[in-house]
Image (cartoon, rainbow, N blue to C red; front, side):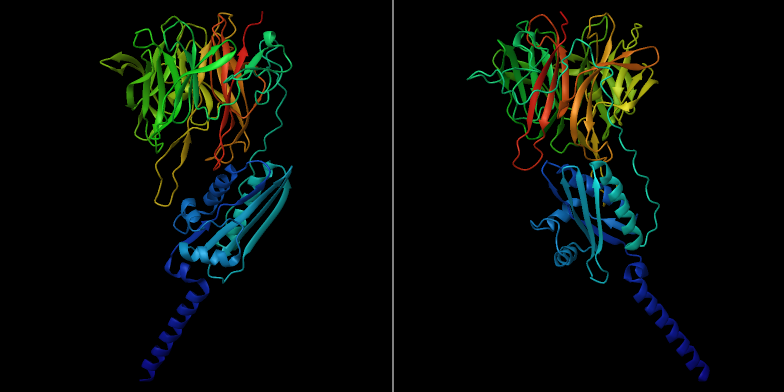
Length: 557
């Protein structure tokens, strides 16, 4: 009897210790349930539009706080729905209310204030249960470059002091060095000035789109021209004889429409357009007469409305308007001009849901559509939107020049071997494909598509050059999923026996270059370098995008 009572007391003591341990450790540890964290979109206080930083900050914090099955960060969309119109910063009462409705343990919120060169970061982590005090973090620094290291530091503190996770502090990203002077600037051919205002100079009443002279140049001797602004986001542009009259037209694509313009008497006149198609996202355009009927087809590469699949189309002028001759095509299209050959149409049909993997083919017109004539090579890390074929080494060999997924330019031989890779970022596009979710709690990831690259003898010396754009990203590519460009330029590169060396560049323009072409823009018998520039993206609600066309004169006479 005494022994039985002894064991009962011991069991009671043992169970009491377990209960006490559960109380101290907490229910999450005892039953191995994950912590759930909601990140409220940060309030951005700034004179300029830094809205893009909201998504970038969310991505940085979510990636640093997520911890397998132990810490789950709910989606941004779910957190935004729980706000009910309220903006961060919010008070502690609102934190508990939002957290309770979301079923999370912690709510992270804060603000970013930018005044001139001064940047202030104010972040708080609130415990929904109220058992822990609000963990606050404040930092003030000079310049945007310090934002990412400060957020990294805060995330480390949260992991260690709130979530009980010891992590090594991630090294600060290498700070971008001040941009060097234009060592490769062309001495004669392109303007030594910048981007001209909004096209208010030299305007005439009643003109739809007129050119303005840059850098004080006289109209007859200007080295570049610029159109007035479009109230569109230009996603692509190309030159070609659309109506078969022997003159060049300019074809422009927006996300959902196609426009055809003609340069005449110093005016840029619209001659055709398509209706908006809300189920399509246009990402590029090329113009060439591939079917041989005397009218250049307009090849519009596009994605579906969800940005998860290819949905391209081909248009043709029928004497009165643009008519679709191919619709909902699963192919990306690009036109190339290899040396010693006719213009060819390239096509890529991506493998599954990977836009950087699939067969590269030459296409031909047959039975009312475009079909692969022969396979060139299998692409493993390249998308046709940033690819061309030509004699880049000037040795009568046709090579592939293409961007990889990281926007590094590559030269690839016909078997598929990378002969050369650039160490510097070039290109830089805002157009993207949505990749499948990696897991149940994961967000859909953006895979940015590459920009156009061309192989052409641009200076008339008998040798081929590579023409590419370079857009300068505000965050130095540290935000990963989100981009914001501040300036852009066109670069010309030439093979020097070892790699593609920089020959010359245009000066920087405000905004970012979305596409470019080379051809007789104004039908004067002399080719021009033509670039579309997005001045304002119009990403914010109730804001209008703004784009323009810049025409660089290549004639040195």
